[in-house]
Image (cartoon, rainbow, N blue to C red; front, side, top):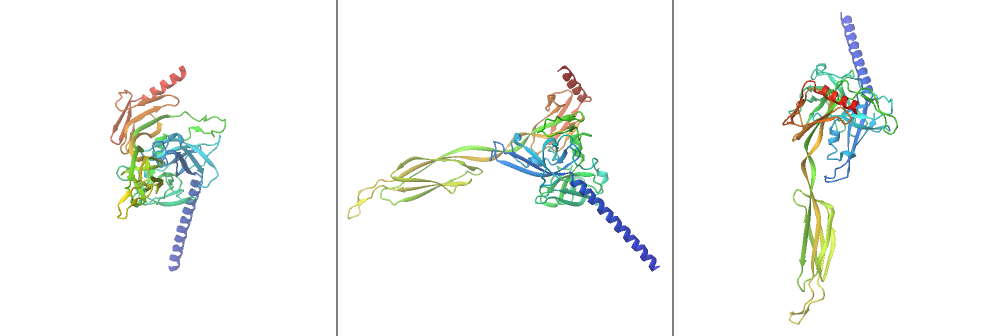
Length: 461
């Protein structure tokens, strides 16, 4: 009996070991497949003119991954938000193919976005007929995952690493208040890993890495992949064969572009307020006094900073041996004006000490002009949402805090674009903004009528 029990035990151990080996092999194969679909995304731009540092270059990084062979890449919208208040016309996006240090780099353009869900879909340029390595075309649903049990994996480019894999579990299907769409995971994410894919052992995509909860390192968030499919539209991925702009090839359409919905809003944005400050400093000494070194301190007002490049000084008035030495200890918070006063001649005194011939007293007036700056929040129009549109109702349930002046446009390509604003009386399309929620409720058949109008205009034109 002991021999028989020992045989059964060894068989069970071997079976478990074999299963574990097969599981590890399957995970490794999936990692290899996903690694080929990764890209290191670099966004660059120049700061806008109304910022504290106009024209200064800024840069941000993230991970992205291809989801089809046509160059459709998914990453986080905060790749752009991290640039700050930049000039949109200067924005360039470059994808390092497969590795931070990859020699192959390709330009990319924004295709779709949802700032409310922190998602950005890029179109990466490739030579005509180029096929991109990509992840599995199907994705996992909530029903495919058991909380705290189903293993999930990720791979990306944390800051300072060529790439890194990780694993963990999904702990909740609801994020914190105001971000209920997020899923909570116990995987740890680092700067630069935003936009990484989260996937199952079989390679199906679960979601997109968003980041870590501030003050609670154990909680990290991912965005369920279904939201990517929602903004790009079912079956959208790969609408065109994209070619390198440097060639004379044309873009060969694979299927018609879908209608596109864009939502704009005025969002509080950092800007700069400027004011010019003029000040005059005066000093005179008395007869028969020794030389005097002067230091006048100039400080920025509370909440303001000095633009040191704008400081200008001038001597308004001087007498005797007055000398203005210039600036010292210049910073954004303060600077100093240095001068020296020395009377001309000597005081002549009689034996009793009484002055009988006075010297010429020194005096100096110095003027200074400089610009003070402070950062203020002003509402600026931002594109909050751009998606493929199928004519159905849309609800954006988490608009950025403080958003005002919401409006939307629907286009079919070319110059065919319909602008919509709340309360405009459009009989076909209703748009309602309630706090941080936006609802778009089209009437039945509205999009078809728009398409017919578009087609008739093309035929006439």
